[in-house]
Amino acid sequence: MALHPKHETVYCERCKAPFECKANSFTKCQCSKVQLTLNETQYVSENFEGCLCADCLLELQQEYQNLLRSGVDAIAKH
Image (cartoon, rainbow, N blue to C red; front, top):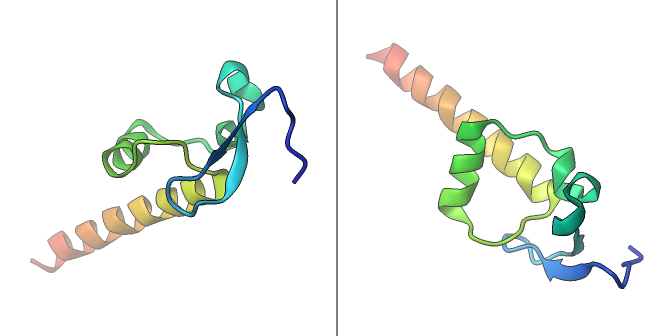
């Protein structure tokens, strides 16, 4: 990945992969490609403080959805 010198290179807090943080140009930042619900955003922020790469955001979104499904399944069994 070619990194642009105007943007800060950061490392994903979860997988440690380097990526360009474009917080000043959020719509161009790789993380803006992942559309999280408010609850998904809260789930991520409760577990991580720093920036995450888009791949990890997608994985955490799926993890949250799986937790919701397993919670619904557990409730349905009672």
